Length: 216
Image (cartoon, rainbow, N blue to C red; front, side):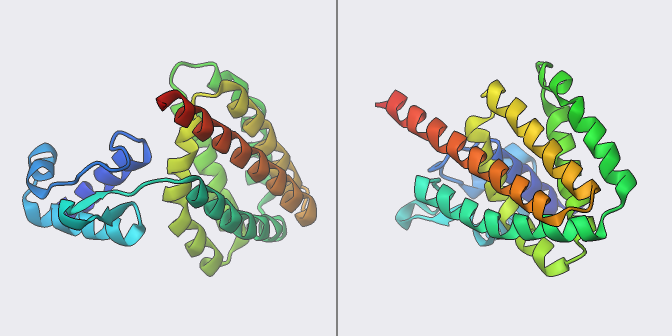
């Protein structure tokens, strides 16, 4: 993998996982030393992150990690509702039943994954769910639009990632979507997606409010 690709992937993950917080100044020299690459690949990585919207230009400070506001979150979920409900409808038509039956079984076992100190296996399961939905929908334009939005969505989801109760509810909501897709019921899959996204948004906005109040 090229140095610029490695730099981009590492910086993107640092931003999504909040290791680089909003407003953090991204200095090329400092980043090149930390990542162990020259300034050129760092500059290329920062250009891609700027195009992604994860980085923003801020006056004389150069590039900084972009802010996340409640307005940003609400607008992202408005887009997500439109895209993912249609994705669910199409996935129910083009599904491979075996794939979604297997996912359903895995989501039934999700509570055991969430009981572990490291929840990486649960997040990997959600990533497999996304990939299976994309493949079943078989609409490259719809999938491309979602892939553009997903880094931002992953970033805002981290706001409430420590809420164990919400994660368990989300696993149950994913199971309902998967079961509806496996059954070929597109409208039920879209409705289950609507409920899941509504609950996710409410949880994230509540967590954002609590964090704001706690910082005052």
